[in-house]
Length: 435
Image (cartoon, rainbow, N blue to C red; front, side):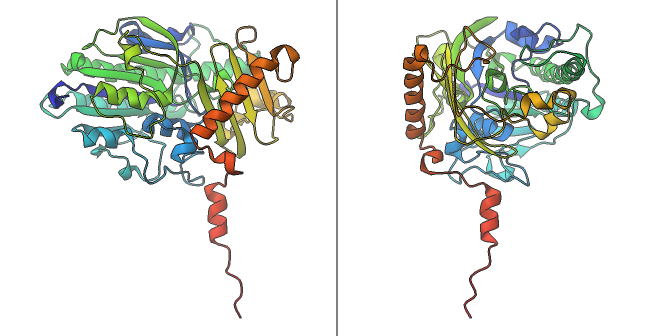
């Protein structure tokens, strides 16, 4: 593809959002800008991430490879220290190699060595409104005279604390409490705070979209919006239940006939985003990429769609390895260690819901295998594992999960996974006394 024919790409992400938007049916949240993006683009109804934590999910989004394959099996920041394997290629690097000018706005949570990712310029971080202002100034500049641009815009919101930067709770349209959470004042309090933070990020997204239209590049730009994982609530973030792995995915591409307001019901995974973006840019997909491009699906062309998505968790606060396969109807989760019923991250533990219902989440895990019929039991409460009526389904999904682990060379197949902290501890072990 001639460089002049390649679309600009504006990739926008945020933290801890899941699908908690008006366009995904949450009527009490104020998200007019993202709802408009969905009405003028394509919304993927069954979009999932590969990991219910920030760094592993973002690393998969950026490399098209699962966390256990790219090396980021836990958080990347100081104190945890998970890193991409040296030979991993970030989307910015791949696009820059093929003529794109690459820019990073806001946070990145993939590595402590951002200079290795392949960005031509790294702009500042900050609150969503500040990052959006940087992006708007950039887009309103002389962008049309440059090479095709890849701009990655990562907003902090709606990560906890929800009042970061003075953001206020929002209950102006009521408060929606998901059914998997306990009701009561504690839940309404936390969810209204979340709604305020989501309103803040929607305003920031609106600033970026308005600047894109003002720049005259609207028709030449593919815009994508997604989140890293589910909302930061108990039994969501850090779990492989749907509230932990479902993510918004919205794409708008005025230069292509992809439809406005179209809803795609097929299963897609965020490991598929990188090969899709490369396809749109006419850039070869490198060998070893584990996702599959859904560009034909976006263009309403025939495509063999996924019959399942896969997700994983290895480390977050502590070692809790688990893997899952999810089809349209069933989900199979395999845990590899005994632990609490669900992991509740430290920031979520500070919230009123967990503090009011500690016993609800801190009991022991009763089974290492879970099987759910998502049609009959969308809240994933009734574990069907070992039930005679579902034995055939369980065995088929178990086989499919092990095959995926083998095909992607999951290190769990070779024994327990050592964390960076464990490896650093061994490095400091004194040598035997040679006297």
